[in-house]
Length: 445
Image (cartoon, rainbow, N blue to C red):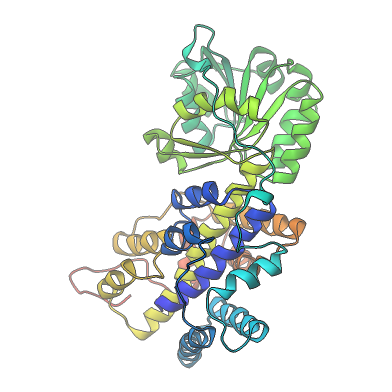
């Protein structure tokens, strides 16, 4: 079971990094963002930082790795537990062994996965990262007498948490949402209610958006009675939506024609991270605009990473989300077999915690089984949306992302069988994994 999670996770990480490379992202920044998020794993902690080392240790052969997968897949067939991710990983290993030759080992997967993506995973990234990094400006607008008037649009769970943080850095905070109740809550804290987004745009120096999709962002900016007509030259728009890097690039170009800059800055860490100041904000956009707003974003809660031109922050978020979502499904698949075998949860937990197959997803899922509490406040439909964006990004960059696409298909089937509004933990039921556990009885999973 550990080997199944490890081998699938290893190829998944390589595929995701390959897509990041094609998008022009830095390995160091990408690895840091992954390890500060739900995409973290023993692989991202150990393998990715050593990706370009010339003295990588000799790894086990691909034949030996396939033997492990053959055993778990055979056991799954015997017990009536489908193992599509393990089976797909075995196919990738078999194909690679046939390409490289009889002496192929796991290190050769760097070359094969990179080749499939049209890049090299065996040399430093400089040539794939054309946008120079920039240090933040010494000017922190939020700490000056002329602190910006900030507008915040989109007061859902995440947006409302971030808007509350914005209150501490703005001279004035104007807010807008389709829900008047959400607006009223921020008004009681000191915000000013905006009657519409056009009026908000006319009054604010810095505007932040946090809405469901890039399509919603485009409508707010350029739709009828949208912000575009009210934006002043010199205004900076920060988009904290998890959206499409390509749509973000196009919107940035349209705004730049008006003298307005767009910074894409999706966040990871959820409402709790915003409240505790532990968010990770993944930024893309013009270096000069980023330098102006990064101190404000930092004071709104957590670590800020700059990845490059417009859309780069969105691309980094999608790479991270691909790993987080896929790791969860890898865990569910393995636990489905563990449940049929009757493995003791405590023993399994202790084993995986110190093994190569460990992921943050495993820790969250095991915690949910122990306590009955949800792993995260995330709707299943949001998972589908993000995995569709990952698939679209991979297609545009001509990167296979075959494991993440298989995960997307399984999650789309789940949404059809369930309801998009259910919490993502409902996926466990489709794998026949129990969501409750008795410590006293030391039950099997």
